[in-house]
Image (cartoon, rainbow, N blue to C red; front, top):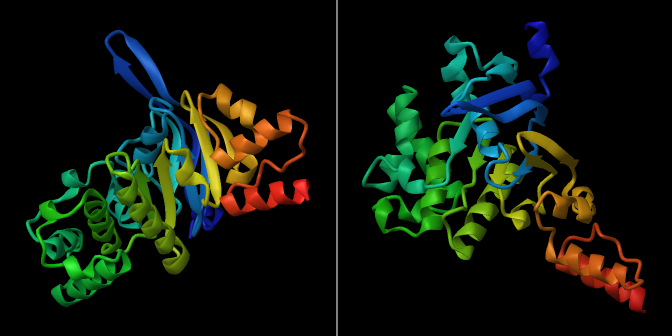
Length: 287
């Protein structure tokens, strides 16, 4: 084991002084600006930011879809810039994107989920086992013989997640997976990835611009202009109401309510994010 591997044994993903630029005409735009971040194995980390904040560019560095223009990214101690390690890096970190239709490659659900393991050269019996397990984990086993194009958006995205799970990654990075879904589909997907994290120990990195999807994460990272501007537990980050508004981002409705009441002279805790916590806090003050 090398020194680098020992250093990052508890952190499955580490970015050090990561820089990435896009060239548009004669201008060069920094999508990531000297960014450093570590993701602890087994954690659920949400990355929040507006379009153009750099969050999707960061996601694509986490399994070597993009390579650093400056700095380094390590996955389980492996340098993503080392092309000889790319396949192993992608075994460990799977990606799920916005549009599930773009990840569908077959006319039958179970064949679609089997596609990734087949490309890894997994034996047929093991593939059958993995496909069944993955579909059960996302609650889609009963649809295994269905045609993907007949499913709802949320169901398609769960099939896409199953396809990644069947490859047995240690980490799943989801890049705005609910952006094209209705509220019911969004709820299905968020519930699924929380269960995978809690019950299977899979590290989850959720890239989103939907503030409410981040509330139950272990950690919330807020990005703006290619930099990290806030990093902590959601209950801590969302107490910084004025700062979040300055970033052009919202806070949970519960936080917004208590923030408004505090302006009227109340003394309510801004870290009570759930409806139940908010109601209890207001009840305690009024009684």
